[in-house]
Length: 114
Image (tube, rainbow, N blue to C red; front, side, top):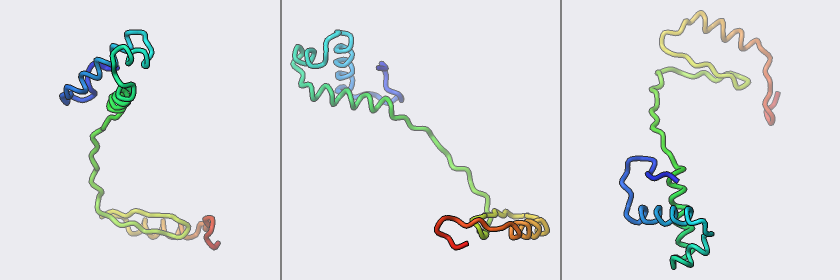
């Protein structure tokens, strides 16, 4: 177990106390039931806090930023093909691409008529 939380957020006194208790049990070499009996700690509290502290250590967040999507249009063609067009596209190239794509035989999807 780590001595500090995964982020620089101050821990509550209760969390600090239970981290110490869990560390003591681990280093004691005793099983949880015997340790709890000796320390007069309800085993359910021990297990609950151990789970809570373990879950807190394994939960991490990563900052994500969304890249702006360039303004454009999407053409949906037969057979599930899609074509994305953005400002400044070459119209002649588009006409050639569409002609080529439309000439390709359509592969029907399951449940779709051929």
